[in-house]
Length: 356
Image (tube, rainbow, N blue to C red):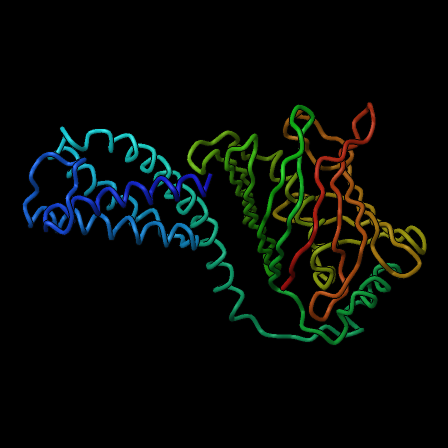
């Protein structure tokens, strides 16, 4: 689709160049019958340059390409109206380009709401005192959690207030086939906050999703073409479900955060432990499973709400393929599973790309 749109904009822009050429008698243009004055010829030339800039910005994925797009289409359509007899079919191209430009604006606006929240979190945490995580900070934790944190390599490293994670993966639902996605997530731990932005193509159509968890509010907003909300939910059930997700992220994506006093631990044995995480009056529980190497290998909770079915089911995230991300050894592959009465259903597969 990107290539088709670039070709359309290139052809449309070239037609505007023809108007400039005709006005200044640089070549004979038989396709244009009406005379074009030099002042209007300059406008045709400006329109061509705008489309050239638009093509370049769009091809380079400049986030503000839509701004030039609106201007290019506006001037182009004014010229087409003025020279309607010769140029009326150019309206079709302008309508197609305008639809793409509106979608581009929608994507920028939607993603910008995520980026603004991220900037607020980064500004807040940037002034926090930098501290080093020591052995004494993990003494109160069950032995398998201590072993996990040593394996990961958090000892003598800075305590974690912020984490950025980039994933690629696949997701599906019971009534929907797998679709590919990429995501960027920021988590903040001074006050639990999760900002997750996903980009995907569902049935060939660009779709974006913003998961917001902050203070006492959680919201999941998924938009088709970044314009039309196909899912937009919030409320107590979602907040509890996202509280499970936040704690899951702490365990899997930023293990150094497990010294948080909001977590209450209960030992089970040498390879498993139970934890209860409380935030803003909402408590959730999970059982963590480890192997003998000290790696966390699974996270299981019965407190996560399945939004699509309006019920709570057991939720688990088996993880594997640990590798180095900066100073830490962390998982690079995981799955998200609902345990329905009829059996396990893997609805998400995640490959961790970067971690900061």
